[in-house]
Amino acid sequence: MEHFKGISPHRPLGDSPTEIRIVNLLPGEYGDPIECVLEHIDMNITKDYEALSYCWGEASITKPILLDSRSYPVTTNLFDGLQRLRKSDGLRRLWIDSLCINQIDLAERSREIQKMLSIYKNASKVVIWLGECLPWSEATVQAIFDYVTKVGKAFDEDDIDYAGTVAQYGLTEFWRQQVRLNEFLRQRCREIAI
Image 1 (cartoon, rainbow, N blue to C red):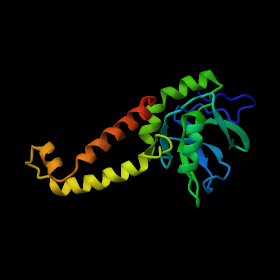
Image 2: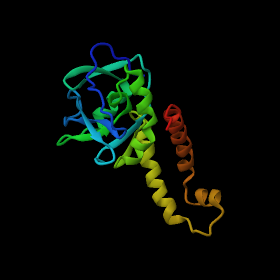
Image 3: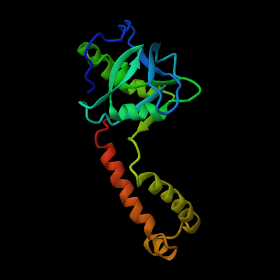
Image 4: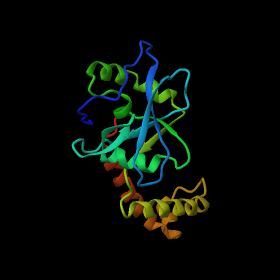
């Protein structure tokens, strides 16, 4: 969990059980400082936000962002995600648990965790950030997409000899890469709890 020391930038939520905070991720280029502005919305009325699901990573290793013009620590994985997810030409509206919930207010945190299913259901979409690509992962994902296209053209719906067909079309490397990709996803996703 993110560790914040100092005065929280979070204004208290109102009494409505459907009021939540979202983050307006301000535009910028990769490498620019990350700036976010909190906004209170009614999630039953305003549904033009995306919910971000991500692996928190090591909580003791943080980088600063600006949250409502105040320095605020986030885990390295979230920092990297915000760098990659922000737009260069406009706001991106996100619900991010570690930023939208006042982490130092235990009563609020408990209440907001109870709302998470509704928050995700009401979002326009859910974005999953698994972390920065490893040197081999980006090339592997592209190779798998290329092979899947090739396999899709080769497989007949009635074909049950997949191993034979894979070998016949020279797609054995696809299966090797698929195993590596599954391992990558398994390692990245083991911390995600929805």
